[in-house]
Image (cartoon, rainbow, N blue to C red; front, side, top):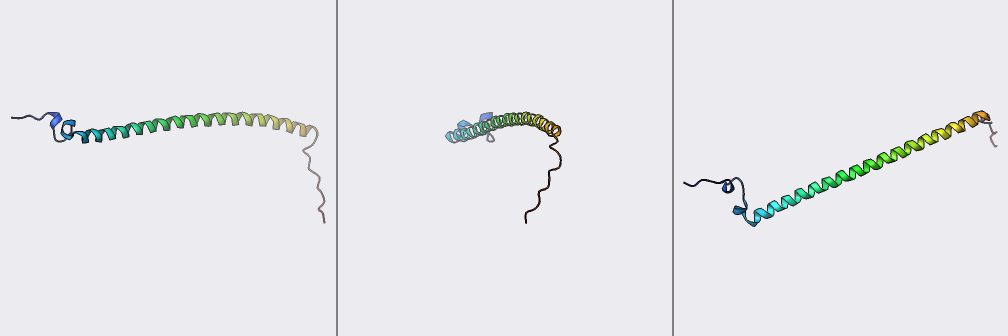
Length: 95
């Protein structure tokens, strides 16, 4: 009586039963998987780079806004000191 070994079972192809076709088929799948993972890593790296770039821009903008708020406060103080904020005079309309 002959017993089946796992390598010769009909449900799982093996290199012995399929030859070059099996190798190339699994080689293609392996190549595809490696390519997919590589692409995923590249996307993750690009995403992290863009996130860092975004955070850097936001920090720069926040610092610039703070600087502008200080300048605006100084300008408002000067306008108030010299009464520049009074209503602008009306210029007559030209006929």
